[in-house]
Length: 110
Image (tube, rainbow, N blue to C red):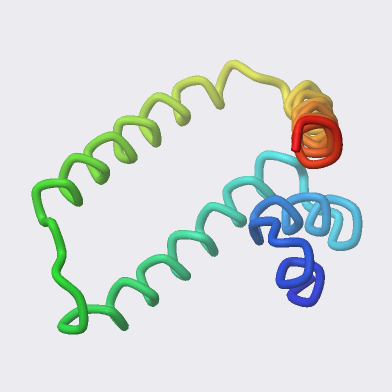
């Protein structure tokens, strides 16, 4: 997965969810949560590694963090109302549409 992520430039969460569902057998909702947790840990590790090396706009960081926390709360409420099977199907369609968009953008509209 690391090789594909580095080669394709796709985010780890993008590849991690199907891997957790297909190879590990996790339910879709648990795979999404696990993927988000791993992304959060990677972000935190990267952020702490950069502390002291770059100027950080703390106001901007606070705004982004507030939006992220609001998204977590709203996502948690929506999670209770969406079936895991529908989420899996929706994720598949999202990946297909984004893949087509990227191909069109890079090949035809370049």
